[in-house]
Image (cartoon, rainbow, N blue to C red):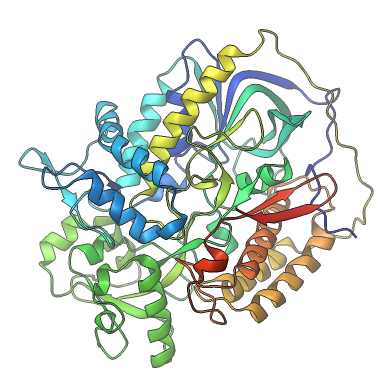
Length: 551
């Protein structure tokens, strides 16, 4: 069978499915998506479709906080410089400047909408994280910033009469006609959220569509991301012909709670910012041996150091030690982490926390300009699903929620203007996808998914090599040959198809970039090579094949 990615996942016909019309369709209910919805003119009808419950997004699970220059002793220029140092020459300086200068205003919006950031003596408390030259991390509920921010933003959005939110609605594909995005085909689940339950499909026609579906950490065996993060937005944009960029750059968070058989909980970088130390199984504090910034070095350096130390000690993890810090302060500052560890009998004030790296943030994504516009007319993107140029080859800590706020606002405003300028009548376009006759033998989707996650962790994880990547590409291509052509009727199948689509692009990008830059470490090409690779790699699906280039 051909390896060409199918254009649509499921068969459909306008004559057989119900229709819904919206001026602006927002796909994704995290911070970027809801901020976009809030930026759209109240005269327009907005539909927000979110895959699970509205609270289930990477945004809600964010612990550390939002970076912003709020201290009078801090300067925009220093936040800009810290971002550029972390991301390197692949950062877009215009984007970095724009996002960082807008940060204080976006923080104030959140406060106006009811967000309660941590304060002391009436002033917002500012934390410190790796790569930052100043204390500038705004946080809430200690280590549950995302939960508090999303509580306030969800409540604010739900009060808007022109915005409708559909929860438990899986977006299958973007609808395109004559090269322009016209909406999406969605499937709404009823009853419980069991992925195996067939869903009712519907065609949603929209004047403008905003993609804000978050990340894809579930492609890896070890990840901090919730189960919903399967790269659906990346994959549907790719099938629709949108350009994907920087797909080799995946940020691995150095400290993920590692308990055999337990869920992989994030241990926020703020723990190290408050004085937490990394030690190996012998109790040796090893980070000063790798970088003069020790535990406050950028995430890629810390992740790589942890992997090296695990190899040296032949141990499955290292340990994060906060037992030397004031116990009441630790429990107040990190209540979520304390509770997560307590479930496994770990008292963080007395016991060391077992940690190892895990996939955390997808730096690459759908290429967007300063307004969030993609390469497909009528389609915009914001947040982790996009590649804006803010992060370069390595994201600076706590710049992610900030990007979602700024680009959500920009994409929402720009899509709003485009929708207001569009013709007055809605149109049903002559789009359809036929049923494909294929073998009906059942597949063990869970086994394929687990095999994919393991292969991606081994070959496309913290360390990569050409040989391992080539082996992984061969395995992924084999799975694609018999999984992608099938037309499933459940979310488990659609997610696997999205993961396979995205995994192949990520592996290809990592194979092509024969150097080490930012979070991309090739053991067979360990040096930075500006002469050949100081450029972005991009990938596109066309009607005749799949192509890539560098710019």
